[in-house]
Image (cartoon, rainbow, N blue to C red):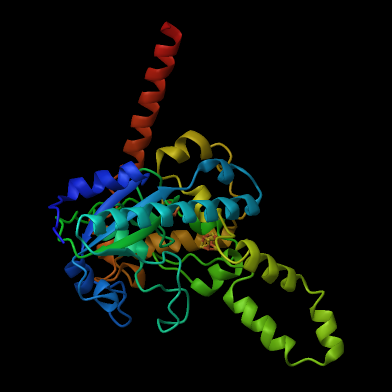
Length: 343
Ligand code: SF4
Ligand code: SF4
């Protein structure tokens, strides 16, 4: 089959035309050389040695649901965005194949049980996104994009087409320890110092997820018949049923760190008001954020900022990107208001 030559810009335009909000390209060789954790390599070559480039696309999560107090509407939106993301990525992969370049998508939200103890996929889409120049890691290990902060979902297309890669940002997008709003808002205190306690996060973000399912079933098979009848009235059984049926409750239940993060114009425009106050903020959490700040200032031990991880946090540290963005945003707002008055 004839192969149509394609540049990186051609491929990015195809992705945008299909509906991607953000798109970047990472070199498979670079991702193979820099797995997020070298002990548990999540690399393209572990999936296929034929992959030359990883195209990372992102869709923005619309802000309306993050202005509400109901997590169920966030979960529904999550599922809609994720399904649309799969469709956009699948179409892009098909288009590339039609032009002679074998390409396929990975399952963005999968867990490979052979990797560590927690939800880790064959590729880390957030690390892939950073290699593709789309953002840097936040204090809570979400990928923060300058455009939408953490309010994005990403997926990867593995292709045999060799493309000019983008480069990771060196400036840290996350404001860092002096912000700590994600830490303050986290209901299970899962945010570490550019690290995440995944088990603690899962208690809120996957209320009826895998661990709850297996614990429930393990318990069910051990109790006597009376106990079994009781268990069938348990709230967990409803949660598991609803999770299987609609995925609600089993993934993406907790919106808090996404909703309060002040990176991105979508935050300035629609979230700054409703999310200004953080009801979950406690003196202990504030003290923790301050201790992280002190550790960083003194060059102390922070595993999330070690020599390997700092690549994805942004080796230059925070240089004021969010403040610059806010000034620009306010200037644009003023110009619009003036133009409206003049009309
Ligand atoms: S998703 Fe919720 S529980 Fe998990 S880190 Fe963010 S705020 Fe904490
Ligand atoms: S809330 Fe603040 S500290 Fe947390 S990820 Fe966003 S910018 Fe960074």
